[in-house]
Image (cartoon, rainbow over all chains, first blue to last red; front, side):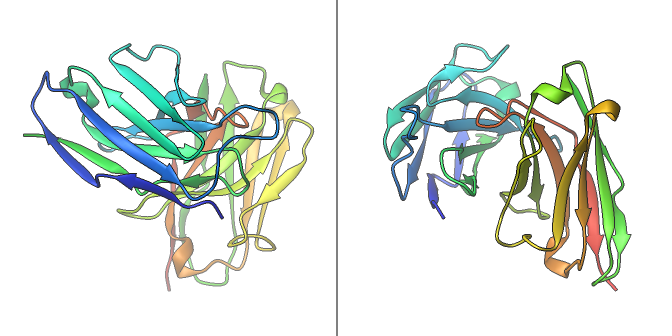
Length: 112
Length: 114
């Protein structure tokens, strides 16, 4: 199975600050169709996950453009510019290139 | 898009349970669907996927014990959980899409305990 290593496990931030979260995979996430199926999810406290970014860098519907995703092959980054209160929660990366789909352990974003 | 899970509860080890996910707001028959779980205080773990044409794939941990199925006429996804173990205790989410997994339900709690 592909191991997704997500760091840091937690972040303490002030509103308006920018932060980055890293996700590294144990195998290349480039699919045989040429696409890279690496998604980022946000799980606000007590809620179900919601998709932020798909295929490395594409914003999901309704997701503000202060979120951005970059990366390739095995190394990926989620950046949040100008953190807002609604951004607090746990961020998960997930690879959907290889079966079984696998998730990072999560990064908890908290207020400083 | 709305996904609403049901059927969870407290069940003894070795027993069975069937979860349902009622879908609305989109053409259910056109989408692959997943079941994904989250143990209390833990991360997310993928369990099973069913394609729009009802092809299925499972995680090794549930293969032979869980069965994913769908009824397109009822816009409903199912997960039959058999031979339940304490480590199956989790919130179970249904989610839409093959690689994009764009919408998630609110989840249903399954507790396996004697």
